[in-house]
Length: 315
Image 1 (spheres, rainbow, N blue to C red):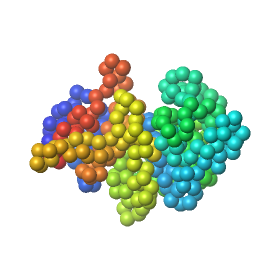
Image 2 (spheres, one colour):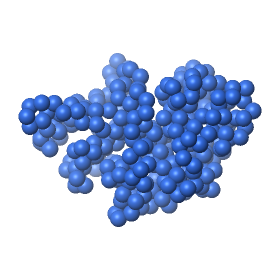
Image 3 (cartoon, rainbow, N blue to C red):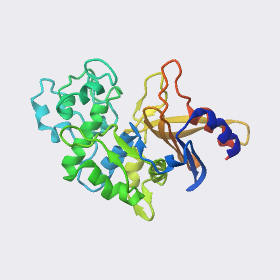
Image 4 (tube, one colour):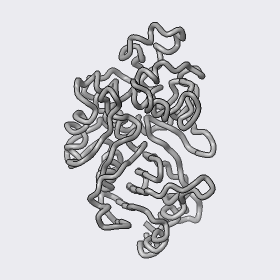
């Protein structure tokens, strides 16, 4: 990879950070300001992928049942709901955003902003009507992530953050973090976590290594692999698929014979340009963080696909 070319290309983009690691070796590191390397910053919806990892760990430990477990196991009140389908929504349908709730993430009567203004976030989500048969359609919903954080706390007897400290953050060397909570003290499952760029890099490397870290298996290879396998296709303008709170996609890369190979990858994605890309075939992890919130008519550049992917053939 021509790092001097990449540095020059990224300079006008005002990125907070760009880190690229291959085969466990940091090959590129860019910070807009040197202080960014050690500052905690919001990772927004990348929090969802952290939560997915914690759910997998809890399943490994037998604290949570498998992905087919029904919603009513954790929230018995849904058995009284007039829609009988609700009690049988599965843990996997929550993880894949296919629970079927009527929801418009950033607008309308059923939305993420309205949830955050309610006195009880979990109850707000559970009370929403179903618009789709569970398991049939992807509808992005940060409320579902709040249900999962509540489920994790119930199953482990710990707060989501405390459990993360013990079984994920601690082993990865994450000592400092900040994590918002809802009015009931449940840590936000879909957003609200602050980490450093290198923490995200280590998290991506953990998944590249199929859940292994420094001679320990933090997440079983079984769940680490399954959690990043696409279950449903995304809706335009996005392409690719959605897994257990991870996005998936593929890229075209020129081979030595001049033909184009399709390379699969998966990624965590957060509002305003927070990304963790994992490309197993290339043994590559890339972290991007931004804070420039541009308008709809001037969207942020797709830094990974437009600036980094074209250079992959020279890795």
